[in-house]
Amino acid sequence: NAGVTQTPKFRVLKTGQSMTLLCAQDMNHEYMYWYRQDPGMGLRLIHYSVGEGTTAKGEVPDGYNVSRLKKQNFLLGLESAAPSQTSVYFCASSPRGTGNTEAFFGQGTRLTVV
Amino acid sequence: KQEVTQIPAALSVPEGENLVLNCSFTDSAIYNLQWFRQDPGKGLTSLLLIQSSQREQTSGRLNASLDKSSGRSTLYIAASQPGDSATYLCAVRALTGGGNKLTFGTGTQLKVEL
Image 1 (spheres, chains in turn red, orange):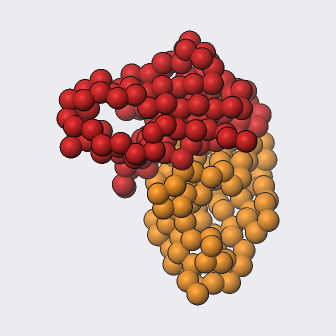
Image 2: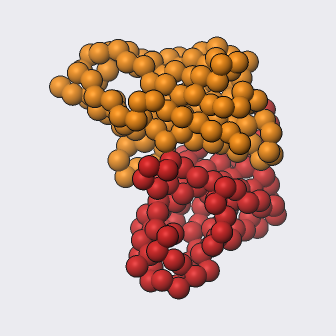
Image 3: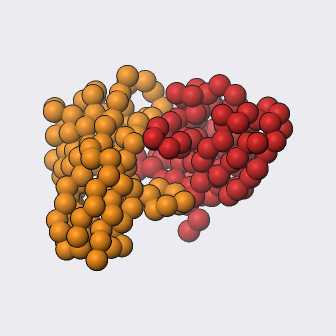
């Protein structure tokens, strides 16, 4: 039972480089999210998706792009990495609806931009 | 805009003590509230989910309460153990704004000492 899996777990980038973070969930959840976690600031929502083929901006979307081509995958892209994007990135998924919409998180990707 | 506050930011208690962690939120229009645990360098583990229509949820030594009208939730940990040492996060899922977004507090860092 994998749940939510993030790839890679660690990455070091040089300023200006690009990369894609992959999130995969096997729970058939409609909603998927990308958060970043920084010391003293908690988790902040970058982008989210309410279903295959849809994406929307969260609280801190600048410098990131996302795609949800398949229901089980949610990709986060950094086109030109900046030191301010050094952070721990978490992906989450949850069911649709107003009932039990318990969210499940991946183990995180620690990204350092030098 | 929903704001979530957790007090205290850090807490140190001796083993065996019962303790209460607090979470407050500014907008009472929520679907539910979820408590998470995060160990250093790890992802978030879901502990309890309370629906907006519920007053409390229990799991083992954990009990979470919700007072939606006053914008407050508490997480009660009975007979604390060193293994409970972690950061505890609460998150509310908003009714408005679409996408069932989770808004997080900045967490309470708990240390249970022998």
